[in-house]
Length: 248
Image: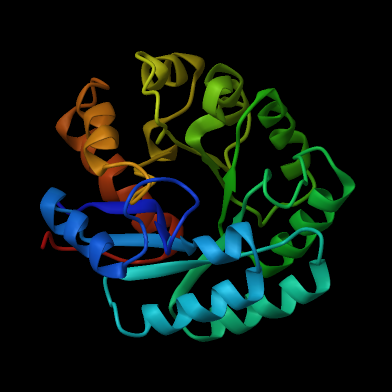
């Protein structure tokens, strides 16, 4: 069965693990049978979005199994809008990424609303780092932005219950459950809240977290074989327009 990982990282990170090399991404993908991975540049997330996105573009040109998210800095909306257009023009970027912590822009802030306006116009999926109860604000933010589809990165983190109810109330929110603490029952809770299987995506947070953690979450979630196929690749292929895949 093919696997698409919608939440990867590339480049050194200010943590203690080995995270710097694209070769490591590919090594872990091979180990766990992951065919494609969509990554953001750690430089773009924690330091300079434009420079990090440019460096990632160079790596993506040499690694056909990796695709990119262009990191958007909500503090610089006009520059980020042009940078996003430039990244998408390469054909190697499939969407945008916003991390709420490093730029200091929470979900409910006016700057995030401006960034969402820009992304709604662009019409590409957004991977949004979420952690905390403000994830409940997302349905309201998407109400007047009909083209924007948001992957709820980490499914709210410690606020996974709030994230489940948010996704149940908005058909353009997708849950992606990678997290360092894999609380039992998160997927079952979201399904009971009314989130359809078509809006679960598979993400690992690799290389910050070994992909085996996220694979274990999917294995233990009680999906049928057909549902597991949707979660591991089909939903992502539909969201990003990747078409049918064959397992590597």
